Length: 393
Image (cartoon, rainbow, N blue to C red; front, top):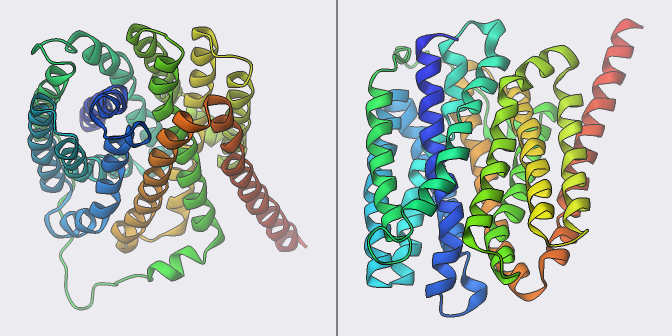
């Protein structure tokens, strides 16, 4: 770990502070202002829809201006969207809040590239650990995010308006942090510079396709259950302090393993680690179906977080086997677009299912993407094993 990586881990922590606070409050604020209850998670959906719509724009800005300028532009948007969110809450405007979260998606699309930028700040043989350890910076968001939401809830006399103002301060701190990170300059471009393969050609590679599948469905399942948790716990009559506690441990589960996931991948291989992530997701669903007491929410969401870490860190590492340096902006945009598109669907489905079908059926439905992820990983594992066997023969 060098100075730049530590600072990038800090930026990741501030980014996750923003994300976790959004998850903790957007559904509840949406529920209090939505025209009908099933629309409660539209502000959550707006965040990921905005992220999906921004992936192409972010890819072009990264290619044209480089990592640092593009990341700072994302933080400017984070600052403005947080201020707009506070205004929407104080004005009790549901659709303005949805618009604010759509705009905030540009920041999310930018900051989701921190994990890819990590490999550019270290030696080539350290990239698995660099990705894992920078993602471990999200542990900061696990602790600060729920507590920030809880302690700023009534700061301005209107529920959660103060939380959006606090997020504007978090964006300012992130700007200062990124100002001290030195990224590699953009390589000179000319007509002779290789353009790389098309999106279709990248996706036709089994290793890249499975990495995209695992990242998208792994994030989708996590988002489906996490976004519904505050609503489900409120429906059960549990206080917001319990919800904040459950979300804190969920995000600890998401990012604390970052201190060793990279080492596990180097020792056992990326596909076995991702397979364990699938098993942890299944364990999460099993626990969630046993009841709706605080301890069951806590255990299920913690298992969900660790499973997500193994799948997402693994899929990030796996995707790097499928593209060349000149293809990185295009390939990373594809990964993030598919992730955000899946999250947009699960954000809407989360609110609709938990308010109409209940927590148990939501968990049963989430078995489908978990099983599909496991099938994709098994297919790639068997394919690679067969190729190694034929090469030896």
